[in-house]
Amino acid sequence: MSAAQAQDLLAGKGMEQAKAAELNGYPGPMHTLELAQQLELSAAQRLATEELLAKHKAEARALGAQLVQAERELDFAFSARQIDAAQLAAYTQRIGQLQAALRASHLQTHLQQTGFLTPQQVSRYAQLRGYGQSDPHSKHQP
Image (cartoon, rainbow, N blue to C red):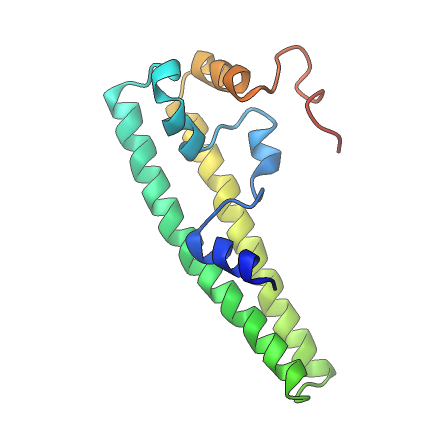
């Protein structure tokens, strides 16, 4: 794991973990807050979004720290030449579980955020983010 990747994980950054949600009409809280004025968020929507973002960042940072630690342990096991097939399986299973939990956290946050917005705000968000309106799949390739 690169130092930049570790730093991003420890900071709770998105790292495109929720791209499937973002590109398919499920806004995220960070960009929703950045666009709050254009989306005409109510005070209640803004508060709910701020709370969601704070909760998510804490969870993402905690999972990120666990993932960084698990990657360091795997690296150490290889560098110390103290690894066998069973240990490798255990390390990579743990890392995979943490990666899945982190991605699920990011995606779940987009689901929750979408529930705070009106359909008009979701549509406006997509426009403001440059995703287009005519074909929701035209903005990306699978």
